[in-house]
Length: 298
Ligand SMILES: NC(=O)c1ccc[n+]([C@@H]2O[C@H](COP(=O)([O-])OP(=O)(O)OC[C@H]3O[C@@H](n4cnc5c(N)ncnc54)[C@H](OP(=O)(O)O)[C@@H]3O)[C@@H](O)[C@H]2O)c1
Image (cartoon, rainbow, N blue to C red; front, top):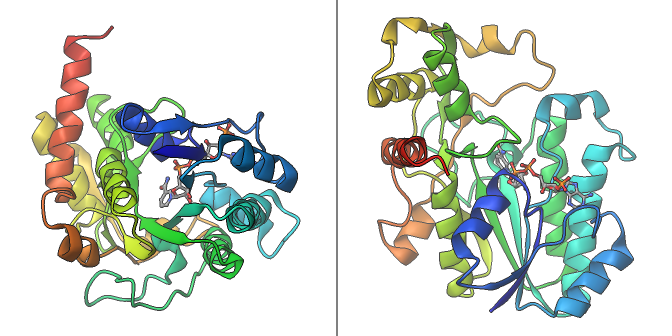
């Protein structure tokens, strides 16, 4: 199967390519080769490679910086997340190619405190990044292409140099014996990138369309997450303190969601257990990969 990937150098896309370069015939132009803001270039790339599936991982993911562009449809955040996504979806529509579009829990408002968000829950984004990602979902749907939207949540990776994620941030702080203030009253679903990649491959292999949440199978507070990392890596617990989300949000432009969690039950009902994992299982694999790299640095 031929897969054309936009955003293949990013945190999530690069792991998908690492894991599945032998399973698929993959082409992944970088942004200098194909800028998704250039509609003609996107269409040409899709036409020339003639993939069975296009995956759009490309996005503007600087949530805090995005807030400086609030309501600005000329801003880079709206342009990449909404217009770029539209260009990719319209190319897929006119060339009749399947699109896998990657979205986020940030399409929700984070007020659902009873259980994690399902595909049935209604989006209501509260910051500009979330709004642009929700526009993207709608524009992809409007394009009429064969479409799978996969929402993911807080990806974390043992080895991605270009960007920190929550797991490596906590780990590096603890290893440097620095104090951590972790939010104690928020619910999150951090997900190991290779689980996200495996979930996407499963959906692609099954030729699924529609909306799927692809995430860890449980949730934690960031405080619990930090403590789990400390425990698994044998690091000092006493460096970890709690802070309320209200306190944490005080100096933030883009408010973080209180309930920033996803429920992948639909995925597990269709594909069974074992592809996605609990957060702790994800952290165990995270540690195994980090240890393996430390023991074999080349
Ligand atoms: N990271 C998170 O916490 C998170 C959480 C939930 C959902 N998501 C979603 O998951 C997806 C992947 O996120 P990520 O964290 O892997 O992203 P990332 O690391 O920030 O990477 C973004 C990717 O988009 C590409 N890109 C940006 N502008 C482009 C343009 N104009 N044309 C072509 N490519 C362009 C970048 O290419 P260059 O490097 O060449 O510029 C890079 O490969 C996104 O849809 C994101 O919204 C992420």
